[in-house]
Length: 428
Image (cartoon, rainbow, N blue to C red; front, side):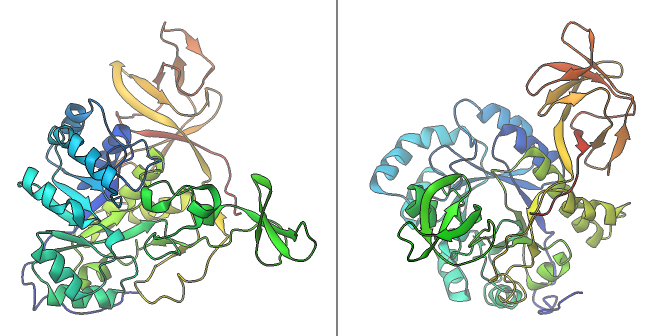
């Protein structure tokens, strides 16, 4: 059901097209983000990103990134909170940043703003969601400091966004539409730091809230404690219950059915969470939102419901609409985890001979099994008559992760198609 917050047409006679912004934890994911429909992607550089466990980028990748990017947008997340030693490292890294084709820097710590403005005057500044901008006055202040875009705090409702848009029409607004949420205030959480000395505010969150726990009687037999499934003998005082459970795990956000509501509220960019997630996740989720945006813009999208349904075939926790329609739903934790009914097998590479393609293998593939291909515009198609070859051209029955091989598909395919096989869907 739609939800009309505010008719913005009288305020904005010409509405900008909504941007689809996808995550990229490495060069390979960046390629698939763009190929499967992203207008822009965001990446992190080593040591300066709040996803320290993502592969991130560094070294001599700038030229390859520029080639993949083409005429699309690319944003760099510099969204840790900087200590003095971090500022020193930033100063030493600025020459490296110059080589990358960044259109904007995503910043949470105002301490680095003047440095970036001075060194990179032609590149935009986007305020990270970690800065918790939730109201019009805050957005005006950041605009006056030189920010072109504000990534609003996840706690904003649609009504909040509509008012901010009305009060500050001359700034871009970005919001998260899909992926993991946090029960802490926009990620400002110390649970991971307390439990295993990995701080979320330094980019090293271990997602302790999503681990599996069970209650049992404490060592002193005077209290109930939690024991985590993978850490026997480490006890945390908590509540009674049966079996293992998560204790602070939030529901995932999914706004696939409410893109028009976001546009009506004045959102410019729709952001997908997940730089640490797989190529399969990046492709499937990006593709679904691309198709929905295209449909809302009046384009003909065959099998639109099918592309939407593919979101359910990616591992996720119980879906919600976050804070957009109120906070009661998202404030309730969930232990429910839906696994994907498919296993990601790999992706189709360049054509090496007529009808034969390189294969980037991520999980074991058996020639006796049926596989499926998906593509940017291909919902999916099965194939049970493909042939695998080793580098010497010998036909083989199986191939394992990381091993070189080629594939002769039994159906038409293109470079960039993804391979998967059906396993089964489980709810935890």
